[in-house]
Length: 173
Image (cartoon, rainbow, N blue to C red; front, top):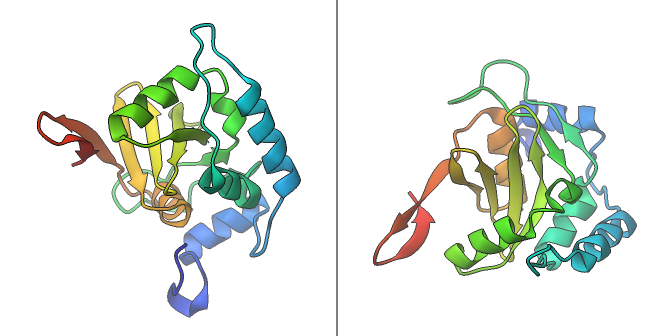
């Protein structure tokens, strides 16, 4: 997790304000809700037999940020318009194959995290806590952990497109 922001806060001021407006506070932890989501995801099997991966990094992100509808930070973004984020893994419930395919391409497991309601992009998290977005234009790397990803998405930083390199597999570019 990111620490050491100006003033000793975990997030930059605009992102911190957006998170607090959504109901987040330091120490927020709803493990009961996170476990309910984990159970629902584990129980889902797609018509093609695909299942969701559930792992500690995802459950921890859901416990701290789950259920929040975070508005984009006020003002212009750093590179693109700030994006609102809804942390709700159920937004990806019926997309087990999509998340599984991305996980195989990245040689990890992927679990749903939420969505960007303005663009329709889905958010996903891997076993190491890295966050990705998936939209109609492709797959994107949003950051190395949930804090940085929320900071960048809510603050208007352009995610990095994932590209396929013939010799190296899929990697952020």
